[in-house]
Length: 303
Ligand SMILES: [Ca+2]
Ligand SMILES: [Ca+2]
Image (cartoon, rainbow, N blue to C red):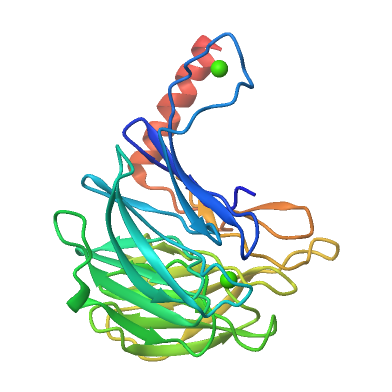
């Protein structure tokens, strides 16, 4: 199965595959060049591949300098056994370094301020500095026990790290705000379900409210969107239910939210529907309104 987000860098894409908890699968680098323009469905040969027992599940990579960095499943039917993160030369696939971790590593990598951040199903948030040659600075490695599994990709803004943690099964879970520098929990709030994706943050309203908005989904019914607001010295959670799907469109959700340039939020849940959610009061800048008016004028002029 191809379960891992795709990362693009300089004409190449990087992604991983998963067959089963205790079977081999590869992380691969592919050129985006179409070597055979006559065929549309030809098999493509990987530039390189990296094999791991247990494969790769939601383990999106980052590229930093000459290297690509991603995490591995632990190769067992359990979720809390010995595993590792890997740094490879992104062009050749040659191994640069590995670092041992605990648990199936099922988030994407976040690279912020020279450090890598990621979570594991064993319930840890890790941070480690990356050396300029792509090796891990082992002595800088930190980990925080989250009190539950996490597959949530750390989202960091202004030194504050946001992620989701599993509670009891697929019942209520947790939204946590963590100091990215020392991995201490600033505050934690219960959510309607286990937030499993990457959160979406907007600072578009910070001038008006002094706060950033963090939009999250959760893996439980009704499968809507909860919005948290946060600011630099905040120590208590503030949230509101932003969107609840209509009857027949409610279901579990592991989707991350993406937004377009107008602030419309897009996501899906297991009901089989995809949602576009936009604000009632459209906040469009003065210049954008002028630009849109001019664009509309030319559209009318030239059809
Ligand atoms: Ca082709
Ligand atoms: Ca496993």
